[in-house]
Image (cartoon, rainbow, N blue to C red; front, side, top):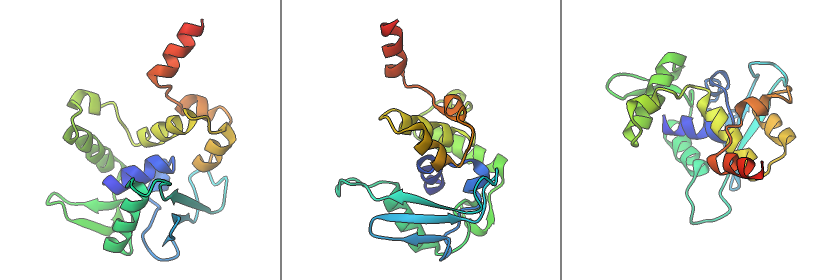
Length: 176
């Protein structure tokens, strides 16, 4: 679940894209500089297929989503990134996890890291996408770059998904 959440955030994936990610060779390749996922299609079919890359952190002392992907690929080797998890915690990578079950696991993971159940309840399968878009916009990544990574054509998409951080909202308020 942690790998799925990290990949979804890092690649701005909607649930429908995340459930297509696979560990199989030709769908996931590990390089020294990045891990590449290949999606054979996306929800809006804007692109026939996409390469989606998770970069290795520049700082060699930092462990990130790249490292989680390398570890998970070595463990699972094939099947869905978003594999089904049964009540005992066993992962079945031959079946993609249903949307409702994924949201329940996401919320439970948030509770396990310290959020209240009420706060975790506001998160959905789109929260990784919104959080990733916000994190990309904060340091000034161009709208076109973010849109391309997310696989969307609508230029208004980012305005909907970019959840401005408190510091940005305060900066705007102070400017006014």
